[in-house]
Length: 267
Image (cartoon, rainbow, N blue to C red; front, side, top):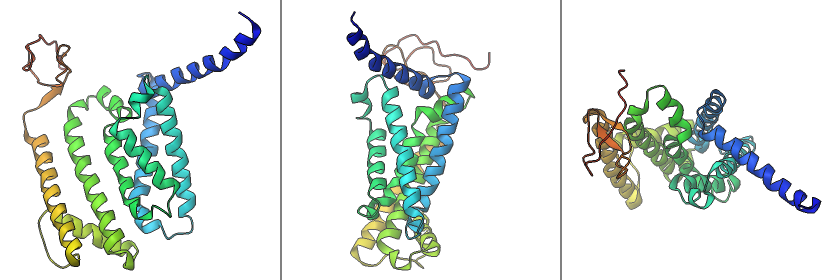
């Protein structure tokens, strides 16, 4: 092989090594990988805290600096996850990835898309479904709480999305922490159907917002109750039909009858 051909191959080999390294960090089970995944999760939680506070921070002089810093972190994370995937075209079509891309766009254009900023809290939903979060938890025996955590995250995401929406479109004239608390108070009172009536949204759009909030909120509460009180199932994909949830003492898959070998944690 000629020297020119070797030089052409060097960048490809270097990229392959980088992808392999990222794959080990994002999807591995080594101590170094778990420490990296924990650090990524902590950064994600800090970013989500910023997203929650965005409606009341957007008027601050330092907001744009923080916004673009978060955009750079999210862009780096998305790029690294893309390189770590075995099939980038399939990876980019995942709902959680599309949500993160949308969030990145709102971060890059904070002024033009200011009214959509409240949707950034969807990052909480995508984080709750991230393997980076669940691999360390499953290793420490928390995998059985996956459904419950998903239900809690769905409810929290909905609460903060609606709070941000209400604050942005109904309370912006009274911008500030007190107005944000009023928006959160209204959302919780509506979702729980408590209906104190001391804070109401004006006009037809206010009534429609309240109706949607109550209907979706009740549904999410029911989903949370089901995950807390229904019989416990283990996460064990069937090798034959890929059904993922089975009874703890299941011997055969209830969908296809395939013999299962579910590990017994008590051993």
